Length: 301
Image (cartoon, rainbow, N blue to C red; front, side, top):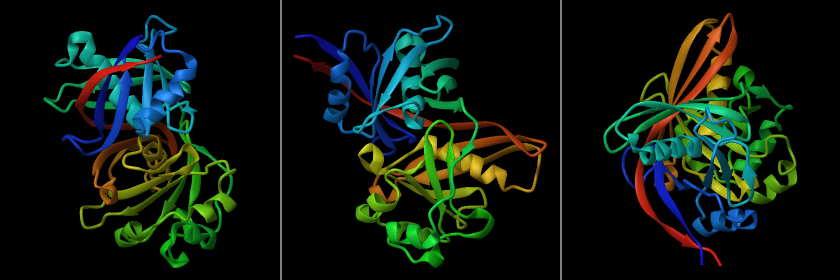
């Protein structure tokens, strides 16, 4: 009975039992294709990654990312956690390095920085923000999120569908308190959003008590069989694009901190940055810490 080694990490946190859980198979060669989704469902984390030799020898690894619902071309916390795990297994866990991971969206450059027991990794998105179709009305979103329509931000910062490789609907709400009360009504979501361009919702609010560049967020991902995600780097990349596009400054590097997962008991901290040149977004970066939690083997029949 063949056995395959894995490690697990908590990502976008510097302490155990926080952040977003990730399982990583550092050498998935030999795992049957039909078993990849089954293994992912066995862990039942938001994502599991499977690493293979790179197509281009100049790169570090080819990485496939699965949610319990399906394979996805890109995701944030798997990119951060997989890069940190690969760097550690290369015997360079105490050194800084740049890795290139081949994902479904293309090669992604990841800087891994040794940072004691919780290394830090930051990646640059392979795809700059793409805007999707018009968002549902505030009334519709309020029904989906069990909120009052007046609690959803309108005007220049009204909800917008964005993708940096994986689409999300950015939904700003006016207070952190309203964010905490949000509850996804799956019946309303099924009726209005399941088949939309960006079916999953990244709901955020300015955390004014912590500072002008601080945000709180929650992410509902029913299309991928993830009711709520404790840390979502791909959606946070979209948020960086959303925020940067609305800044009056046309050139510069801008950064924000996103706190997510608080309502789930898995607080996460995601650092996001965007570069602008003459009003155009030229780069988006997402970073955070991760801690190793477990390792073991899985036996396949």
